[in-house]
Amino acid sequence: MLFFLSVNSIFSQNSDKKGFALLELYTSEGCSSCPPADELLGKIQNEYRDKNVYVLAYHVDYWDKQGWKDIFSNADFTKRQYNYAQFLGKEPIYTPQVIINGKTDYIGSQETSLRNGIKSALSKTASASLNLEASQNENSISINYNVEGTSKNSRLLLAVVQKEAKSNVRRGENANRVLSHYQIVRQLQTVNLNKGKKGTATISLPKNYNALGFEVIGFVQDADSGVILGVKRV
Image (cartoon, rainbow, N blue to C red; front, side):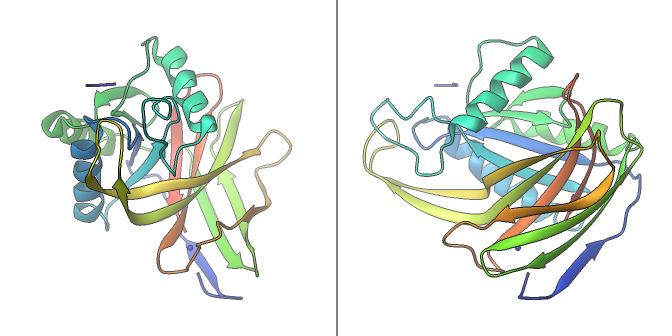
């Protein structure tokens, strides 16, 4: 059915305006069509790890009442997918769905279409540049950000991403399967840029956080159209 960093250390990423592809996957452990998409996005993440290609996997919660509750699901991610449905004029929402740069959606398991979408996105120039520096405290990360070239109503989103996980699913459409997940968004924090394009944001860390298993991906999004203007990994 279709339906990040060691204590007191600093990491920085230079800004540029080269083309980029931000792939936002909407998935669920309760959806039998999702595991192939999860595997494909993991493959793409590994293949493009040194390129301007970024993967974020949001686990939605509308499958949770179908016999299995996804431990990574979040109602806020379902709301984000609904927002994209309005931006793109494509309802109803479904899984597995991939949205590239906030502009175009794809069925998440269709490899040829996704690769063509990545190629097209990389051929275009980013309209915003983003500098990020991160320092870890005991239970949080402080992100210093500097954004240039934003739209009138843009915002910075900071995603805390768990790189990999496995789940033993006992019920639902994927009952008795061990599922592999990649680039799982554990937290997503929004920073309003209307009051300033430079500042510091603090993000609380998940309980199972470890420096090697997590990363932070920041991206600038136009709040009126949903279009992604620029992205960087910390």
